[in-house]
Image 1 (cartoon, rainbow, N blue to C red):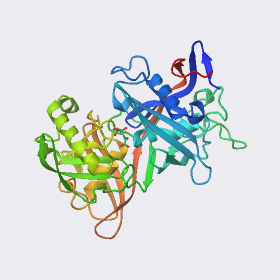
Image 2 (image 1 turned 90 degrees about the vertical axis):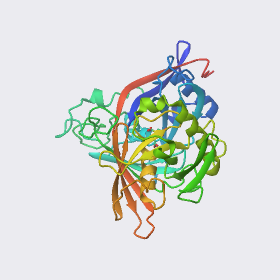
Image 3 (image 1 turned 30 degrees about the vertical axis):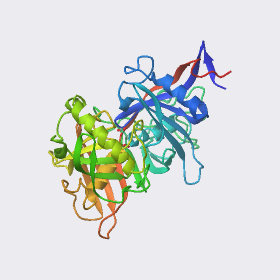
Image 4 (image 1 turned 180 degrees about the vertical axis):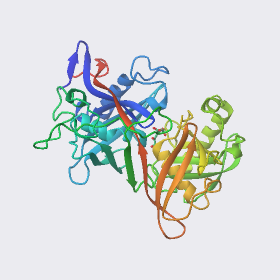
Length: 407
Ligand code: NQM
């Protein structure tokens, strides 16, 4: 059973950055199995609801109100299972319906650190099943041997340090190895929205179409003309290639789409109209009443300004994203490649079956590699991208006894 620490409960936890998101990661076995009890623990860990999250680990933004739960896979075609939980600073909602491709970037590093996965070479690739939607990703991280040429020389204490946990963070189990394998976080890969550079985490997706919705184009159309209270008829593309999005041309809402995040977050008039549109589109997409759901995300598109394919401002769904979500970028890139969508009207996507689509966002750009079918009209069959991740803190998060009473 869980350990107590005075009048609190100590839950083993690693605080990780995954891409442009951040949050605590847990092994599934360390949390209550009952979803309501689990959610109470997550709320207490994050300090929600409270706009400042002063009594927890949350960072007062949806991007830093996320948690990850990782367990072993079936060991045949799935190495790890991952459940993503989206919390909010100022509400007690814990939503495990949709995906987060940014937090996904931290899953394999976490699994190695916490003994769920044994690294097997200078890079380690794992197939991760996201329990939220059944999405499978193939993820590769760098796992050099400590002391080996090209390694960073991190010592075993720093690389392992798995104290009470089984297997140990850096155990590689190889006979006669000169050192232990560890997850390298240091590297040369930069992603917009995160300062500096770090080791690359590559993520490949097959079959992302219709993650939360019933299909890639849940209304059956590449484009719908929609009316909502306070908003005249406007063209939208409702699409889900890993993240349900409603794509709107910023110009149709009287904006350039190049406004700053701060300006958009202060634009109450725009946010009210986007929410009215979201509620109508949620019904059209078969998602029902989305008032208290964090999807679909509203995505303003506009012509690119820095040589990319398209420019975006993503609302998740009530706060403007500092950059763009991973699967939101995959979905926006997919829309750019589909004839007739609101995005394709503004986007330049080259011909061919393997294309890179650069999605511009407030902090720079996000390149999505798309695999397209050779037939016309083109269909997106796979996608791949690069993120980075980092272990920020390892230890226990302490949960007030009122939120988890193990007795
Ligand atoms: O779309 C934010 C993020 C995300 C989700 C959000 C994400 C994705 O940037 O896969 O990564 O859309 O709520 O972390």
